[in-house]
Amino acid sequence: MKPVIAIHGGAGVLRADKPGARHRAVLQQALEAGFAILKKDGSSLDAVAASVMVLEDSPLFNAGRGSSFNADGEIEMDASIMDGATLRAGAVAAVRRIRNPILAARAVMDASRHVLLAGAGAERFARRHGLRVESSAYFRTAKRLAALRKNLKNYHGTVGAVALDVSGNLAAATSTGGYTGKLPGRVGDSPIIGAGTYADNRACAVSGTGLGEAFIRAAVGHDVCARMRYGGASLAAAAAAALKNVADLGADGGLIAVDRRGNVAMPFNSQGMFRACIDRRGRRTIAIF
Image (cartoon, rainbow, N blue to C red; front, side, top):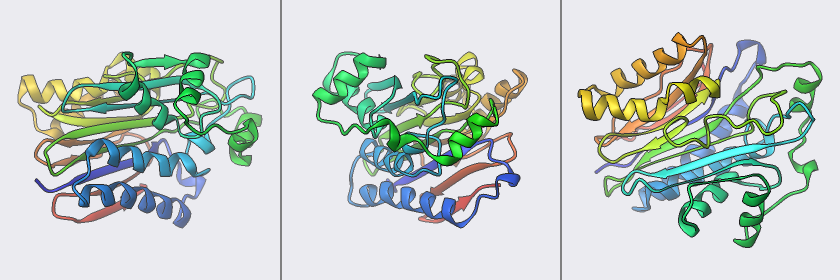
């Protein structure tokens, strides 16, 4: 099996934002971080976590350090990860100080009997397992603060990764800071298994980005897999149909997906989506619009 990886840095990006070389450089760094693991016969789980960590550590993307502010001017982050081989999953929601929420999600999956931990309980769990925490100042970026002051309530974004390893195992991971001006305590689709994240070796791995409420209502991640498993749809057709359901709810967004044969889909219905992949032939793609 040839390894495959795809990542995204969020849909909804506008040409007026003038994204450019810096964004592409971080996308490439994240892509190569995950692929380096796959090339050494590492697991898809390790690969997607590595890619997402790079994006969380960058202030350019809405996750980890670059997270959006809620209506109270606070940071609340969500993340999840899923193993397609076993259907094990882990997630955290509304965490404020964990440097890499994706690592906390992985710890929930590996070191607890739960799938989702939220708020203060998730923070304590992360600390007990030695995960790095930061002060609130670490997460405060000028760009996100300006968005809050301008009351850009739909200013959102997410990061994610999906991968297929040499053993034929799929994995997906997603992380976000939500959207600017959200109500404190709001949880979107990113930590919801079956909505923003899903992986099943019998079909595909999916990570979504967009208006989380619509992705939850449409159960996008599971929908893509179900269309393949039960309806025999191709990855491209299943992804397009699932995204149409989001559009029918009046929302925009996108997703990345890889199936058990190594096919990749990266559809979106917004103006742009930060995305990159290395396909089963080793070809690299990095794109925004």
